[in-house]
Image 1 (cartoon, rainbow, N blue to C red):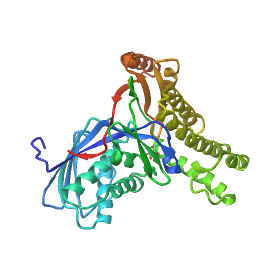
Image 2: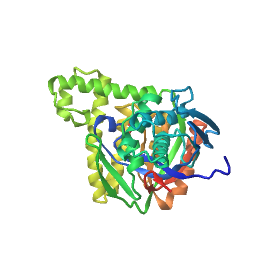
Image 3: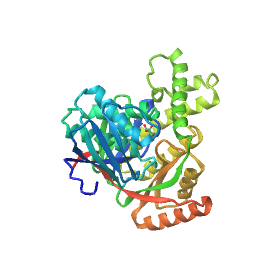
Length: 372
Ligand code: GLA
């Protein structure tokens, strides 16, 4: 599809998140932003009922019949088919055949929400192409539903919401209970955001993610027997959790402890940020990592190694694992004068320890998905 003449082009970004890991499905506060690394989707109508999708990312293409939108064995096809399926439920009959070419400078499977970027970008693109009339909220929710139904990840809503609502140079301080958010204008100068991609993706990531969600719901169900008014685990006060310390299993107690502490930390971190206290903000990132490592247990030795490496570096403000966990990236706030040194040092040490390559991504905060 080299000479592809498009009618609609969408750029859909990845997302970073500074703090509030795994809080979205626990109704807590998170602090994500859209990145300047993006997936580009080009669309044209083809006057049929077939959708032809070509991806330089996957080095493959495939066809899907709008009259037969069912799950397949190929995961990336399911992102596409799932979105089309959910659009068809919301707005029956408005979707028609189209050709789509997908390109990307966003790393895949690195915990940067490339799947949500693809889903939201596709939904936004066909919505524009066929004037379907989906609202942003519908795009966000149907992309999330695709993960639940076609992919099997019971994710929260942070990624999709950020990808649609993100704003250049702003963080979203999002309350996942109400979905209300404040846009916080941010200028980290002289610091920059450096992501270190461990290039590890553990097989259990999906099932372990869903297991954490179940564990949180077990904790809340038990607490709700005595305190029925807490709708989300992140809102339960620590003193109340501690009343249940001997009733909950050790594992479940630690999951809940992390969620409750992280929500408090996330709110405190934003307080520091608003006062331009980057040192304490950075410390919150370290504490968040230790919580994810020790209580929530979604880190892995590669991520722990990368965070630990930064602890003694005075030009790094903060570092933590990001995304679902069990691989993917760490997010680091690094002084701009030392970025090259930082990358050289971490890459060398990582190679020596794990015999594996580290990739680094310097990112800036950009707008959410847009028609270009
Ligand atoms: C993944 C999920 C999100 C969120 C993060 C962890 O990116 O898609 O909903 O739970 O993990 O913060």
